[in-house]
Length: 262
Image 1 (cartoon, helix red, strand yellow):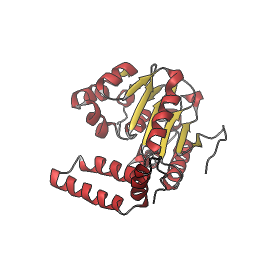
Image 2 (spheres, one colour; image 1 turned 135 degrees about the vertical axis):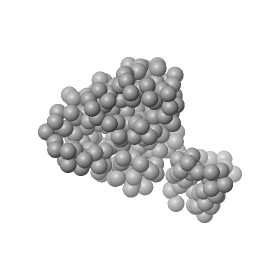
Image 3 (cartoon, helix red, strand yellow; image 1 turned 45 degrees about the horizontal axis):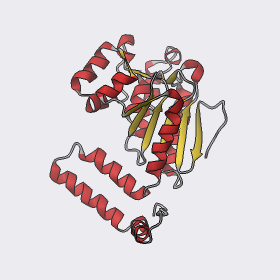
Image 4 (cartoon, one colour; image 1 turned 90 degrees about the horizontal axis):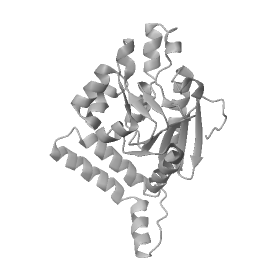
């Protein structure tokens, strides 16, 4: 499953229970072409189906960019039909309803589709020199891989409109102030801090993690009575798990739990 060949458009790695995906086209600021999208979907699916991987961390190769978004040089050669087919395999859409926690370690510019990929992650940790923006409007492109749907939920409608309508870029400090990212760290500390959070989460029970993520995401759009019903259903699924029994045993025996995801 894990592929560390440097020539791949996305490099997959695993450290403990953390699966790491590195967008690997640094010479074009990790712009997303068709080959990158296909490989990203493949590895994301493998990480999803692996019982040994409990958290996924996404970053970019190099220091210039997490991802500058779609590869416009490739897109210039595509017909509208080919463009539509490519959009259907958006990296962001691979993370819709993804059952495992996902962390974006934003090592540089996250623009257009790169920002939208980060928006679909559960956590965004940025290096101090990262920048964020939706420049699509400047190229006659609609930001349709998550920005218009998700950005306002994080930063509010007015700030979302400002970013999308102007196409301007904001610094990591500005992104932190508006709630677009949860933490900003020196570039030299980015992977260590992101891995620390990933490992902290990965220590917990996989079934409870999956259920908690599902309820948080789906209950936002539900009235309170239906949200609480969804919560009850998730609680019951965890009730019959071996992990719940192991967690209680470990507490009483004063030792770390050994969760198996069953």
